[in-house]
Structures are given as C-alpha cells and as structure tokens.
Image (cartoon, rainbow, N blue to C red; front, side):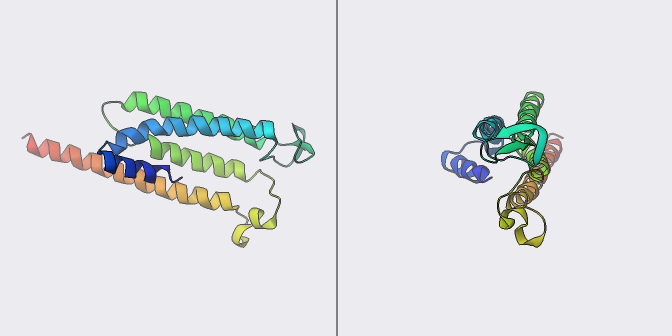
Length: 168
C-alpha cells in the first residue's frame, strides 16, 4: 500500500520516471501477492467459513471455504491484466497500470475478505460497521488509486493539449 510513496521518493532522489517505473512495479507486486496467497493455502491461515467441499485447515481444524485460493487466482488475473496493459500501452501512455491494478485488487480483495473467518470481534466488526480492518485499508487504497488514475489522466491530457498548441 505504501510502496508508491517509497517509489516516488526513489524517483525524486535518482531523477527517474515515476510513471514508467510504477507500471513495471505493478506486475511485481501482484505476482508476489499471488505467491503470498498460495503460501496462505499451505500454511492454513486466512481460512473461510466451514464448508464440506472446502480445504482442510490445520489452524481452524475443519474444512473451510478456500478464500485464500480464490484470492490467489484473482490476484494472478490482476497480474495478467497488468502485463496486458503494459504491452498495450507501452510507448504511448505510462502511469496507468499500477492504479488500475490497485483498483482491481482493492475490489477483489475486499470481496474475498468478506468470506474470511476472523478470530476476534474487533477484526470481524471494526468500528461496529460489519467491515474488517482490511476492508477499510482497501477502501483507502481504492480511493488513493482513483485519485492517482485521475491525476495521471489529467497530466496526459494536459501534455497532449500542450503539444497540439505548440506544434501549430
């Protein structure tokens, strides 16, 4: 979630193109998140509600809905969407891939988070709203990525307008 801030700091210090680097970092983020979720399958954490057709969880002690497996699959899909966008937008536009991936990730992860079992009432019903703490973080990520995407779109549109007026 805070990776773009560190990436921005890196680009300021080393005078690199933030938008182009953020596009390539997006694929790395979602490929790593896929492997993390597969690790959750093997460790037995992040399990879902009891389900007779589910996966046995050593932590929970029952067969549960495989939330982490579905989360891994959707994150892998986001990885491939990011790869497709980089290939499609290469050379024309930059800075769009990371916020689009962040929007997709926050929506899908927020959906799967609602199927997870949480040990404490604090995690399950944060602030008395029925949302988990993770879902609030994902809401912040969603809003941040929408703002980021809007700023990138406006800067590209302003650059195209400036180029058209100076070439006449």
